[in-house]
Length: 213
Image (cartoon, rainbow, N blue to C red):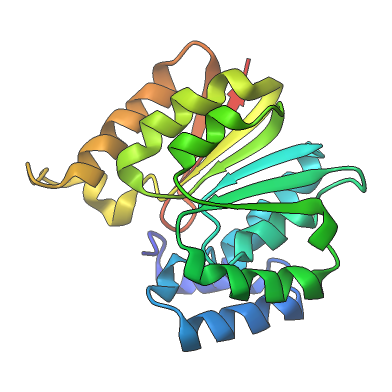
């Protein structure tokens, strides 16, 4: 969902860096072969993720929610040569497609994939992270935050996607809508938790930037 007027949104996109060809190819194949292709970060948000990573210059990145690997490759653009990304997704059927583009990208050796339940996998990770991207099932956002906050280096950044949830966060709440209920609580949590300072950016479906103090 776009929250800006269409002409302004188009202008923003047209005056931002163009995505690399490999990401155009991945987008095309995702739309051709994978369910729910709207889950892709997309060209504009991908450029935001890329430039933020280049600014942060993280050594260790954790991505919760790989999907077809688009955002993984955007983050990889900002990795130093000794940096690495750990990315987790529960859908094993996507691993072949992810690997196809990871191999083509030149970042293969810097990417470690886990397939399974992130809530079970994260506690087993020994690394401290400079950048974490939360973009998986919305009902577990608070659980993910609580699992990763003590694994962050001071000054580390937590990015949280889809925090505007197509505008549902300001609409009348359906009592059966667990995802929106959790996102409302999550947005409140990261805004008030004394361990982080947070700004919510109205980029596409909402991207929260939380800096660990």
